[in-house]
Amino acid sequence: MELTKEQYNIVHSTGNIKINAVAGSGKTTTIIEYAKARPSTSKILYIAFNKSVKLEAAKKFSAAGLSNVKVETAHSLAYKHIVFKNNYRVRPQGYKTYEIAELLGLEGNGEKHAKFIVANHINKFISYFCNSDKTKVQELNYLEIVSDPKAKAFVSTFYNYIEKQTRMLLGKMDKGEIGIIHDFYLKKFQLSNPQLNYDYILFDEGQDASGAMLDIFLKQKATKVIVGDTHQQIYGWRFAINSLEKTTFKTFHLSTSFRFGGDIANLAMKVLEWKKRIGIKTQVQITGKGTAGEINSKTVIARTNLGLLLKAIEYVTEKKKVKNIYFEGNINSYTYASEGASLYDVLNLYNNRRGQIKDKLIKEMKSMEELEEYIVKTEDVQLGMMVEIVKEYGNKIPGIIKAIKEKHIDDDNKENAEMIFSTVHRCKGMEYDAVQIVNDFITEEKLEKSASDINEESLDLGKLNEEINLLYVAITRAKSRIYIPEPLLPEGLPASGQIHLIRTAKEEEKPNLPTTKQRTGVNDTEKAYSVDEIRIKHEGAYRPWTPELDDELTIMYCEGFNVKDLAKHFGRTKGAIRSRIKKLELDELYG
Image (cartoon, rainbow, N blue to C red):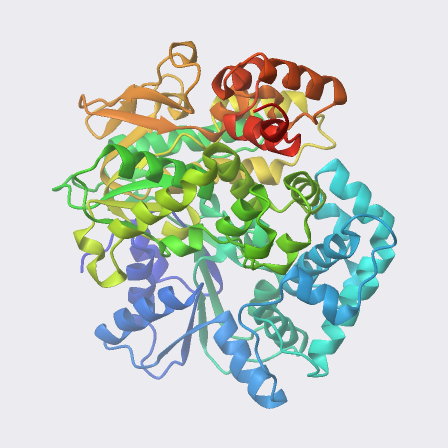
C-alpha cells in the first residue's frame, strides 16, 4: 500500500514513540505496517483496549501474515499471570451494593440507607484504587472524585469507615475468600511488576488507559509505541488518565481521516475549538479525505441512555411502518443499571408494588423520594436516568419497551436494521453512513455558562473536556452525512452538503411537550429530544415538595385542574405530579 508522509515517518521511526491519530485515520493499518517493517524474528505484543478490538486486530495481523505478533488486552495478560497462578475465582459481574453491605456486615449508624450508600462508595473506591498506579488504598483521597455536595458531605462523615471497609473487601478477594473482580486481577498484575518478554509493545487506544495499565506498559524494557486520539478520551468515569499526555515519547501525528470528507472534518475541528472556552489549548488539524457513498447504515447517537430511549420511543411510536431497529449493546443493557436494578423495578417502586421488585436495593426503598435521596448521595447517574424515564412515562413504559423489543433484531441481522440506536460509549470505534445526533450533548453556550458560573478552584476541567470529546466522538462516527441539532452546531459554521441542520422550534410553541418539532436540511420532518430542555422547562422539578406546595396541589386538584395544567403551574413533569398525587393519596381522598 502507498503510505502517506505521516504514516511513512511512523513506520520508519526508532525508539519509543506516541502517535496521536484523529478519528478514521487508519491507525491500525499504520501499526500493521510498522510491525511489518520490523525484523520477522522480533517478538511483538499488541495491546488492545477490549475483547472486540482484540479479535478484530488479531484477524488483521493474521491476514497480513504477521505470525510474530501476539494480540492481547491488558486484562487477558493479567488473567494469565494472576488468576491461574493464584487459583482465584473470577466474579465477572462484580458485586452489587446490597451484596457488599452483606459481605462486610456494614452498619448504618441510624442514617437512612447509610449502609447501602457506604457500600456504593466502597465499590467506587475499589475501582478508583484498582485503576490507579498507587500501591496502597491510603495513598488516594477518594473525596477528590466525589462532586455532589450532599454526596461529599456524606463521604466526609464516613470517610474512615469507607476506607477501612474498602481495604477489608480487597483483603477478602486477595485471600480468595470471595470471587475477584476484573479490576482486581489487573491491579494485582501491576503490583507484581511483571516483565513481558517482547521486543516491541504496541499499546492501542492509549487515551483510555488507566493508571495501572500505563504503569505496566512504561516499566517494560521493549521498544514502546502508544497510539490513540487525545480528543477521544471518554472514559474518565472509569478512571482513564489519557496516557498519551502522560508519556514523554517522541510524538507523531495521523491527521488525515479516510472515513469522512472535509465538511465533517471541519465540524469536528470547530467542536474541539470549544476547549478554548475552558482554557484548554488545542491545535488539532483534521484533513477529511473520505468520499461520500450510499446511505446504508443510519444511526442515532446520544450522550445518555435517557436521551437515546426518548428518541427510540419517539421513533417506534411515530414511524409505525418501521420493522427493524437495532441497539448497539442490545436493548436490555439500556433498561438495566450497572448493578442490576431494572427500569421495571423503579416503576414498581413508583407504583408501590413492592412485592414485584426484584432488586434488593430498590426493595429497601419505601418511596421514590428515598430512592432519589440515595441517588444524590451516591451520584448514581444510571439510576437517576431511570427515575427520569419513570416520572415522564409512568405505566406506559412496559408497552413502550415491548414495542421497541418487538422491532429489535439480533446481532447477526444488524445490517438489516432501518435504524441503529447507540450511546457514544457503545459505538466507540465504529462508523456509520449517516448519523443523527440527539440533543443531549453539551453546547457551546452551556460550556461558557459552566465556566463562568463555577470558580476556577472548583471547576472540573476534566469533566468539561470529556463532554466536548463525547460530541467529537459522536460526530466522527459519520462517513457520509450527519444530522445535528441547531444548538450543537458551532457558531459561524453553516450547514453543508454532508451536514444537515435539525432546527429547533421555539419552546413556547409546544409548551406541554417534552419534544420539539424540527426540520432537517433535506426537508425530512423530524423530532429531537433534549434532556436538558426537559429539565429547563420543568425548572422546579428537583425542588423538594414543601407542606405549602402540597396544600396548593391539594386545593388545585380538588378544583378539578388536570395533570397537564398542574405540571405547567408547578414547573414539573407530568410524571412528577402523578407521583405526588399518589404520595398524598389525593385520588383516594378526593377522586
